[in-house]
Amino acid sequence: MDTSQVYFTDMRCKVGESLLVKLERLIHTAGIERIPFKQKYVAIKIHFGEPGNLSFLRPNFAKTVADRIKALGGLPFLTDCNTLYVGRRNNALVHMDAAFENGYSPLSTGCQNIIADGLKGTDDLEVPVPGGVYCKTARIGRAIMDADILISLNHFKGHEMSGFGGAIKNIGMGSGSRAGKMLMHNEGKPEVDQQVCIGCRFCTKFCNQQAILFGENKKARIDPALCVGCGRCMGVCNYHAIANNSGTSGEILNCKMAEYTQAVLAGRPHFHINVVNQVSPYCDCHGENDAAVVPDIGIFASFDPVALDKACIDAVNAAPGIHTSILSEREHTHHDHMTDIHPTTDWRSQISHAEKIRLGHGTYELLTVK
Image (cartoon, rainbow, N blue to C red; front, side, top):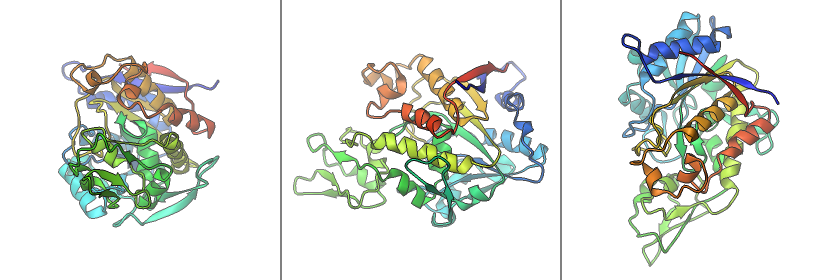
């Protein structure tokens, strides 16, 4: 079985040496300089964070990566695509405002922000998916496909639909245009448990499709004809009244994300960094963040996004859970933290399908960088 190398550095810093110095040493040791950056456009795929959320990556991490790329002769820019749901990132104008509000500006990172799928999320390219099973083509933000090199800088955390979010989630889902996101989400639709719903209507604030309706009993119901399956309502319901009961839809979403990642990376150099700190149970797309579920672990880097994500999930599952987090409210029956938090998800399908389509390897050699 093939094995990929994943490099790791912990969060400990000696007096006089910052974590950013360790990050630069990590990516140097992991071999980022083997990529021919000179005069090449370099997309640094990142999540700028939804305003109100405080667990997204600090811009300092992006500046360290961008500065290293510029020192190697590259032309970096930070990029993400617009979101499918209601929020502060569903068109390029508010998306840029959100990025600036969260500290991402040319003054703080040393490079420009570009919203890859344009003003309304319609500026995309249809590109082939090598080995695709569910998607033969993928709709990817044009600016991401225009780049010569792709670097992903990812905050590793939990996710209510995919189990966890790392490199595959950031690249696959994050690089899809709004049309691409709809295609990835369209296999399953959430349903409302009428006995649990209290009719608070909070979920309606987050549905961009007006798919959540209310009947005479004042309980929510979801119109499957209008719903695109983004799962946002599941994550924001404080009463756990909304769930996806279609069985395989989450698994298929993970598979499609892997295939979209394949479409983005095929045929060009790429490199990946996962920062495993403030490991929140939900995506950074939320306008809030729950308490971290495990202590901060460190930073991982690899040329293989699959091995990278697998190393991070293994590290999170090996870490002690924080008893003041959501883990204290969950039954510990699955022997891993992410499944305990989101028991209807199966994060393993991300890894297994990515291996199946030869995106990368789920086995890895972990190399520690001091």
